[in-house]
Image (cartoon, rainbow, N blue to C red; front, side, top):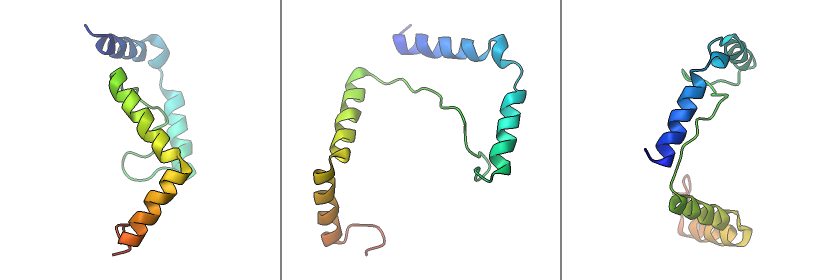
Length: 92
């Protein structure tokens, strides 16, 4: 079993534990979300994120991509270039 498969198996085992058998708290949370009109569509808003395990190389690639997007100067230059070319949605 790979590390990712082992982590997923542990996560599933945790969800099947006694702590998570009584889900009244989750139902109450969902009612509050819907009552505040924070939910949209059939699925609504999920208050919990399920972890997605990725290899270290893919993680490093995502970090580099995020850093490039967060670099304000690079983002502004790319945005202006796309704007001038008319590549932005709604600009065509």
